[in-house]
Length: 119
Image (cartoon, rainbow, N blue to C red; front, side, top):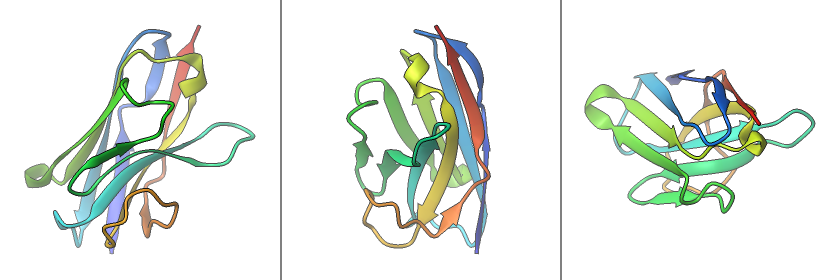
């Protein structure tokens, strides 16, 4: 089992930045595939960014968001720059053992952290 806890959400103005963190505990391994998803009110949860050996990004965030991992600290970060009101959502950290990154089929999920971007 893997437990994931997100932090770093909050309120930002359009054009601003936030950095999300996800701390993993339990049976952690650097071989896990990790990702960030988000879900806005009334919308389906969507893939934002993921990382195994390479990083993958949703088209809507490419060039603005950066995913990174610190294996020594069992932490995954999502640096979000040039934020837009459309980025407002609850952001979830996820992990899976399979190396496939761009999929909704993740085994482990955090509780989520709220990001609100004002215009």
